[in-house]
Length: 224
Image (cartoon, rainbow, N blue to C red; front, side, top):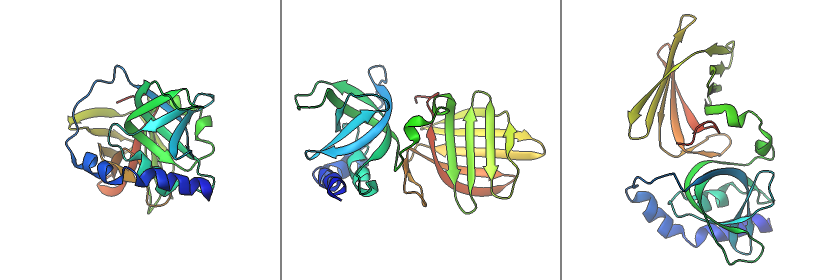
């Protein structure tokens, strides 16, 4: 429990400032000097530390983009205090001992309890993934098409069209095999109702007019 408590301590320090940042209008920024990385989050010496997958480098996390990653990490931390994170930010120098530098987080794509996410070989090919519950559904889109899986239904693998709607909204649609499938996405932080994982988009799936809701995130083949 010590590591989980440490994450909670890290989160409480900037709590009120973090809320103010979330309420403030987000400004458009260039991604040219930002890096997207996946890895493990842990608490160390009262700070949140990020270690990229299959690397020894460690970064002190600073939530410069108002993503609330500190608070979300504290609420998700298990007894070992380890979490998988997919983030984008700027790498800067750090004077802290034992760390290579500092990660100024600008975008949080996904945060979840997982010991296997770093080994997902399909992630780099994935454009996006969306999923929901009640009943269970899961949609994966890549450059080859989309695959929709639903409880009690055979998997549906079809080509699709994408439409950018502005304000971070996105529509994916297809009509094949006698079915009309639409996935509506909005850039809005979403918490999975079963796993508690945090994802950066809300999702609404419509299949022949039937609506189901869930969360979504961009895969490694996309860096919006």
